[in-house]
Image (cartoon, rainbow, N blue to C red; front, side, top):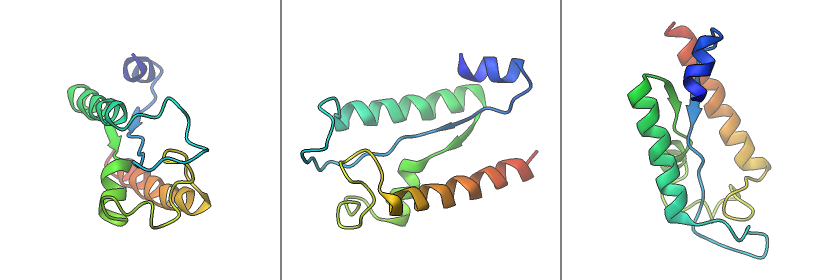
Length: 106
């Protein structure tokens, strides 16, 4: 629906996966569930592919940039799902690069 509505208004839709990490602490929301998050992210990838929408895959980016399972060693997340200032900087850098690539491809 988001992609169709965006296109109807002349907006180029861009969808994005939402990373998480397996570690938990006292700040981790009770609703955080790694398998549910993985299914959600795969659904985003699938919809992007089906609709021909641009995708910013932050999950894949973090696995490449930080390394699978290493996000807890670096200050990327403060509670397993919400990012620290460092994590926000990583996201911003990658999102800006991808948006530029998307813009240049049009």
